[in-house]
Figure 1 (cartoon, rainbow, N blue to C red):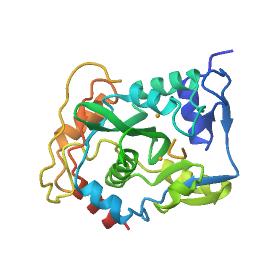
Figure 2: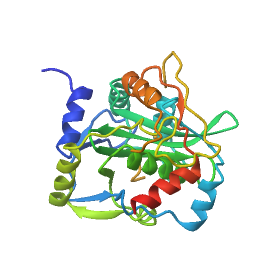
Figure 3: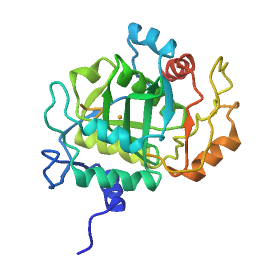
Figure 4: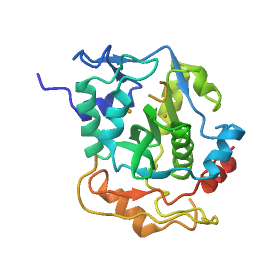
Length: 268
């Protein structure tokens, strides 16, 4: 019998199923299709007022896919109030494989050269499946979530799957829906095309202010949201990023906090 690999896992996501484990050192992997599902509507994402001020102040450098493995490990690490994690080593390996295939991405918050927060998830057509987030500075994971939502909106995504509804996610407008409704939304998202790198270098004809541009460099790239087109796009950079997938991409988003908030407001 062939080993379960990343492409098998992609097929599971397409059917609405995701992996979990009981503990970091438990090698068993369970495939879950819960009766109730948490989703974050991209056209109804709410940014609390205090968080919006923080995002607008750009306290972190936002990067894509420059430290994917580090983000997964940070999400898998024990922390205050969390002694165990659902990310065991087989799941970790599967996500690294998906990253190499260009289907798993990290959005990272850096400060003074240190990775201080972020999240990662799986991208498939117009669906993004948020897997995990972590924070080592105040609001770092929340800022990452805001930038992720702006990126998904700008990239044409239809669904942000948060897996399970939590009180923490409710402040952002997350909803809990039944399995049948989730599968309906998933089917619509999988019929759409989306571009995770669509905002690299800036887009939408908006005033980018102090937003920088992305940079591509050679070399390799390196942890639960449930704890998920415009005229000014730099087409050459966007195309290069899409072609590279995960390998060799070292880029900031090129998007300021102000632009991220603008994109979210326009979608609401």
